[in-house]
Image 1 (cartoon, helix red, strand yellow):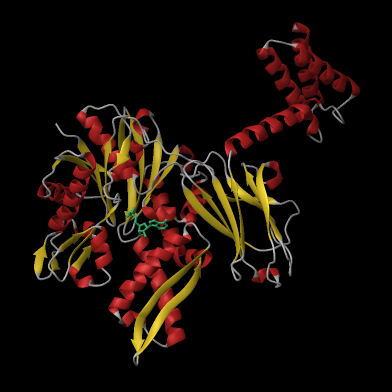
Image 2 (cartoon, rainbow, N blue to C red; image 1 turned 90 degrees about the vertical axis):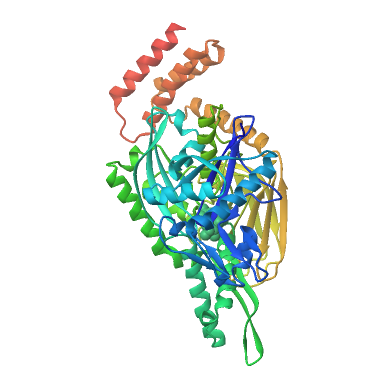
Length: 569
Ligand code: AMP
């Protein structure tokens, strides 16, 4: 019997996955394709295009292309491609057929069975239509499962009974949030809410409106009245939006976007991440209300949530993660591939049905946060650790942030790279430093220095600093970060021990003598357990003494406890 595959049939993109011989799920890939855009088109030669080719064709001839068909599933709408009518099931079947053939090429064997995911809010009608689409594609649909359930399964949630996981799924055209609970190895959806008309497409649209307005002011030409121009601008806007997830600025360019009196007009605008975040702020705020609704429906408080999973391409926008962390007081899990985990979970479900052994997804992540020393203008004196790649980011990764010099007409900035979690830069491990010289002689507010961190799969970090107006740059490559970190941790641990025995200013003469005696005993002692107990009591004493009005009785009690331990020796 051939293997059953898992399919995430998405509004914007679709993905197929399977369990490997090592029991871990992986995404099927063939000829460089792993994510198949859910777009179908028929070109002017009558050729059927599915996936990437159809997505590229769409801006050229939007009338003969279909996207977001998932929204129409279970309904009676039909789609016309070069005069021929297609039902939503037929369009979805073409996408599934494409995934099936990609899977067959990748596996080198026929594929006949699949588990397909659907949103938790899908009605029976919509589930039946999805099953029909699978059958039209020649697949036996062994099960339809909910997307949040699949996301939780990908991370081995079924092995942790009682866990409550919030799955926040923001894709291209839809948003939903679900609270799932693991009970007896089964993942159950407790509550779900969302908006199936909200997603990355709306963010693109906000950018299109913003850029069109600017263009109209500049050229007195309304791009909105030109369908082809808008299709091209939409594609450029999406590209810029994706760029802004990792970089502080992006360029939106489209040459020859329109012609006025035989003169060509070119689009070339720059956009900052801050501006983009401002443009979509209200849409992201709406998603927070949905989280509240789900928690309310499930009678659950943020404190009762064990884990937050981010699913869907749009959750790569840094503001999404920040907003959720602020709203719930929980950092969403970073060790997940937002655009692949639903398919991976469907593959896990497929393998469970096939009776295979399964393991959860393994992803390579950064063990510590990486950043640079920076100063808040006019703010406090100590330099803070400005994190560029947060801990637990999936690698490889590239991320950039923008900084300003500390004062006007500064000639050189020093870039110091740190690794660690302490908010004070110097308390972390210094990985390297370099200077960016010959800065343009201007006020600090007019000098943008873009610092880019790029980490490859081997954990080698490349750091580049570039002054934007001149393009002048400098860089450094950092290797052996793990070794550096353990050396740093050792030094920190040693200095903590030294501070522990440091009795300067620690209470009365008799207390200091007692601590000194404890130090000598610990140095000579062999039994680790008693040593640890002694150290723990000394720590408690030092913490107590650091309080302005410490409780004398409490000190007496701790000193007695320490004496007992020392006398036992
Ligand atoms: P999905 O439906 O989950 O495949 O998500 C597709 C949506 O995610 C589209 O609107 C993409 O433009 C968007 N997307 C993909 N990657 C990123 C990214 N790095 N930053 C922001 N949006 C992204």
